[in-house]
Length: 187
Image (cartoon, rainbow, N blue to C red; front, side, top):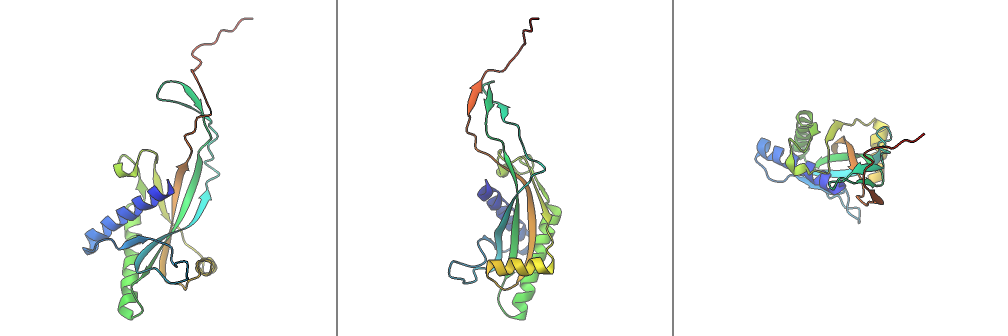
């Protein structure tokens, strides 16, 4: 589910960038550094940096109706938020830095105008995802420093977004029974 969501967002952003710049596939879903500590960002990187449980929307409904009309007992859904970092690196000279800033601005433009994704508007999203809400997540200077230090990289042009309310669940049915249609109460 997480992979599907990130690839969907990557695809949508790449389509937007192609319309704006005429360039193909600028967004890469990769970690900032490889396992040897070498910078991997060439162009625009999309990196998942955190997964957070959304406790306010905690779903405790254990029962649902199946397509066969029975009532099934399952594990509750876990609602999560994804924190996605977009970082840009087109090189070390002034022109490359300006290009990096331009692509970070494109990311902001895209999510400013595309902050809600539903299967109705985006069929490629899939039926398991009810909706995705994407909002800018601002970091303080201290949080930025901690983030880039934990990634093992130097600060570069970047912006972070919070992708809200992705439901993760296993469709494993623990019990299946016909629904109760009437009650016979005898005194």
